[in-house]
Image 1 (tube, helix red, strand yellow):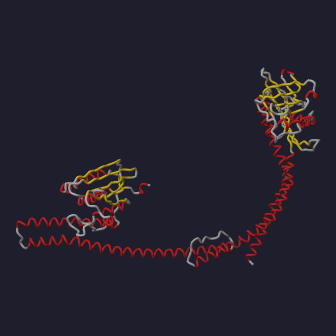
Image 2: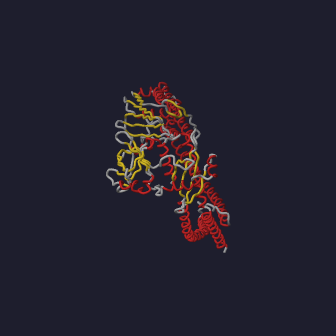
Image 3: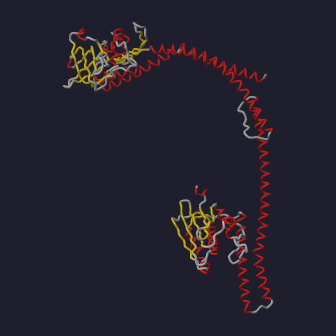
Length: 591
């Protein structure tokens, strides 16, 4: 019942708003639209005519310019404009005209207003433009030294003549004038006014001016009134604007504009709202359907949220933005789901952290066991040797051999010291306590320093270091750690290089960092074993030869340092030996 009541209230509210809005539109349209439209058009005519008057008074247009501007004003405002004296005489010729120029340079004006009254459509169909050659038959008036032709027939080459079929029957003084059109002022098809005599009819009715109109115009104010044409009853707007420039007498701009389209538009709007009223019934039906969905939609959403919560799925349970009971229930479900989701998330995170801690502890235990196993294995041999030789000295070995025994003990002690140092360094890197101290430096300088430190081991095997830099650029890294990487890789290359061979070190620069590789000649490394080179205490020789195997931690240290920097590295076989390469480009730093 409650849902039905809410639906009914919402339905009635929307219907009432719709009916009030529709009634308001009908009311204003029936009683105010026509007056509003009329006032708007009269205001627009008043503004444009005042602007026309200001430009005409300021610039003092000559006859040709004035005719063009009056014609343009008529086209733009769908009316007619004339310049008249206060007595009602038209001062200038009509705005619709042609100017013809003969080959001898003489010109003539062809007045067209009267001609347009009878032959307007046919004349406009000729599409006359400046540059066209035409023949005009009509009466010539050259009073005042200006040739003015009142046409009876106009013919354009390639088209039929427009006008009276026999001009000589209309007037005995018909002349033929052929020339090139230099100026043309014609109305557009859509703005063609078939009753050009409307302007003169309005002039006859308004002039002589009434005392009230004359007093207003003499005071420099515009007169604008509605005028009903007596023949057809069509409503028009007549606007009269006084103009006075310099010492000239006052002139009047007399404008006539039809208001016929106002009543036509109003009639069309009335019919439109009739159809709109019919469509309103359909709209009400649609609103009823929408309202029913408005009520059932939140219920469906709440039901789906409850089902997800029963399955421990608390995602995407957003509250409904409503201020009624549905919104309150939705907010409660949202708060409940958020708290349950937070609690379950915390439990899951705690479980994951506990599992991660257990795995880390197990991993550390395995590493410790492996580390101690490898360490004990590595330390067993040198300790056995030291013990054996020390017992030999204690038992009174031959004095000539005591120096040799002592040298062996010292050598094995140094190896144990190196092993312990590597183990401690590796443990420090593993612990995560190492903080990188990055700065810019040149890679080739560090490589040369490392090579000079290893001069004696290289000389023992007759090895040469060849450094080949190409477009080298500074790198940004921890200098001491990278120096350790270079040292370990060089020691590894020296150990496995063929005696008397070169060790080639290539350096290539880029905008983001540098790339270097260390290549030695010797036995290749099987691909299946290349990934194990970075493991701790791993040696390629199954016998773990102490002559070449070293401590087995050098490459593991290299791996940890480069991983700490975020650099990439690897090993591959070449045609003559093995190549270790390092890319000193950290992608996060490069970005």
